[in-house]
Image (cartoon, rainbow, N blue to C red; front, side):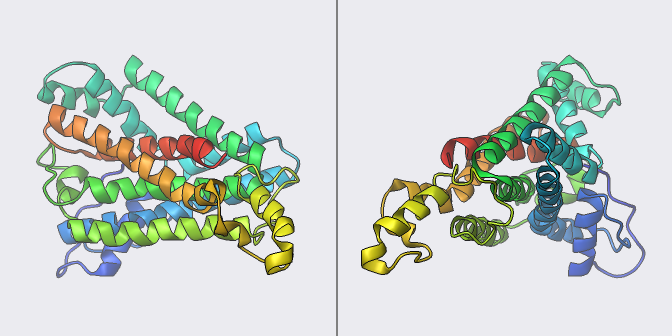
Length: 319
């Protein structure tokens, strides 16, 4: 993650300053800098999932347009993942590589932090970077192949939002910074647990709503002829005909009434996001134990690990 700009002169930061900090730090979108302090850092980490959802939406739009133009799922997925990386300046990926080098070195915390601060990338970083990107591309391709462009785009939005939700939880109160300066020092411990929960609930609910709307055909314009790979659209279509005598053919959402399939479909995305957050928790805990706290590199790595794990979990839970 990029280092924030020096604190602007003026009074205490406002909510708008925190939003500007989130956009400016987590994306390439140009914003006018505001007051930068720990309060702004806490707000930025709380609204980070919204920035992630916007980035995922742009990547999903590129994915849908590529498929509409006739591109096959693999290159379309590569392009979508590349756009997401471009919109973050590749800084989260850089943090992932740096953390892998630091933890993989086996050195004491001080030496590991020095390794992470260097500009070069070692073998641990290269291998981790390649594997994580391969997982992201392959999982997104799987979603597109089995469920169409609409499902792939929604999955990417959910994964990107989950990646930034990991920042919200990694910066909650009680988690220390590994260095006395830098981004980690400014945002570590700035988010109260109650705020993290208050942010998480609507993010998960929003992705469940997107999955449901896709399931009842709202996004059919984006879907390919092979839609239904999520196990939900096909289920709804089948159930509509089977339950026609009882509720009337074509009743929206009738597939929600019974069976495991409809449970996994609308709630598969939030469940996959929770799996991604669990992976982020494990990596964050390891980093804090080894390094003594979080840094900007640790936070960037958590974004990419959560995104990849969420995408991978989606291929298991919604197929």
